[in-house]
Length: 253
Image 1 (tube, helix red, strand yellow):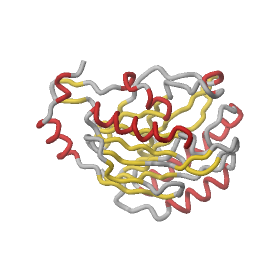
Image 2: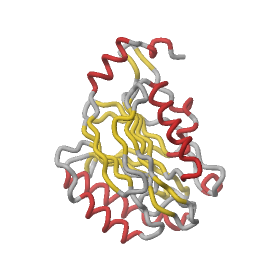
Image 3: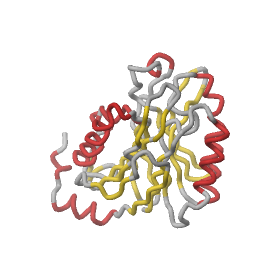
C-alpha cells in the first residue's frame, strides 16, 4: 500500500488559504497513491474554539474531493459538532459515500480541549484494500493500552496504526519514542503525521512525520519544518513473515 504522509504547515484559522495551498500541493500527488494522511485539525490548526467547528463541512468536502479525483483514501482530523457536542474527529474517507471516523479518546488536559470537547469511547479499525488500520489522534499515542493490538486465531487484529497529530516541539522527542514503541509492541507498521510551522499561540512544530515498520525501524521520514509529502510503500508479506518468525502476538494479554 503506497501511502503519502502530508506534513502540513497549518495556518491557524486561515481556512481558505489552507485549502488553496493543500489543493495545489496535492494536485501533483503520485497517481498510484493508496492513502493520504494529514495532521490533526489540518484545516483550522489545533483549537478548542468550538466556533471553528462550523468549518468541518468544508474540510470533509475537501477530503471527499481528494478521494474522488485521486482515487485514494484520505484521513485527518477536524473539529466537528454533532447533536450539540463537539469532537476531535479523525475521518477516514475512501470515496464520496464511504466515510468512517474515530473520535479522539484522550483529550489533552493541558489545553481547553478536555473542557469543551467530548471524548470518544471506542477503538476504530478500518479495513481498506486488504489492510486493517487502527486510527488514533495525537495525545492518544501516550495511552497504548487503549488501542493495543489483540489477536485471534489468524493473528493480530490490525496491521497499521495511523496517528494524526499537532505535537509541539517542546515534547517532540516523546513523539519519536512513543511511535517506535507502538510499532514494536503491536507488531505493526505506524504512520505518524504531524504538522509543522508556528501556531497562533507561538508554539512551534517541526513535524517529525515518519513511517515505521513492525520492528520500529524508520522506513521514511519527512524533512523537519518543511511542508511536504513523504511517500512510503508498505508491504504486508514482510510483516506477516516477521509475525510468523517471531510470534510475540501469541503471548499478548
